[in-house]
Image (cartoon, rainbow, N blue to C red; front, side):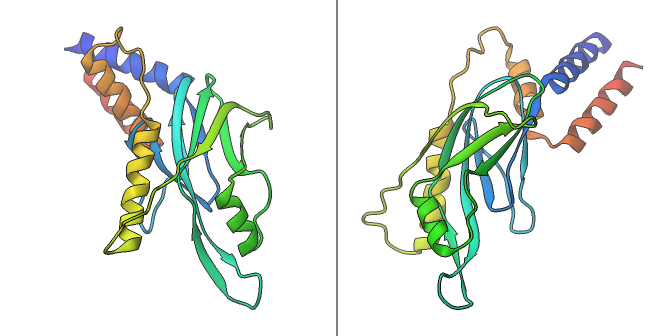
Length: 201
């Protein structure tokens, strides 16, 4: 048992040491990573994800309230899913941002029609990535339009970010550990390592 815990602990420490992060500003929202939903709530949303070295597919939305072009009002805007295919390097921390400042409703409308995204590392260098925007066919949609659109956004994001990996060398328990480690936040990862160390004693 202790040997198994030692192997698991060394595995997680190794993953933690070589993993990096992917961050977004407040006007964006992560919705999927590698075919898995990124859980957000009304009061709390994830603005940073842990990414191990290798290929990842991320879906995010531009979701913001922007100033109207005329008057003092504002309008809520939401884009269709923006899909980013990123090749993360070991230990690199990346930041996603718009290529230009969005100051008004006309800027926001132009952006959601044709998103222009940068993904840079901490040194300001562009990462190895490609991007496209997923399109939703809303013809024939009835009922609660907002709820239907949100469901469609999530479904499209999960399908678009599903990524096939060469996992043949990993056992099922290892796959599960990798999966849940990537889903956990930094605090949960620390708690797990602390728990695992106690199991060895």
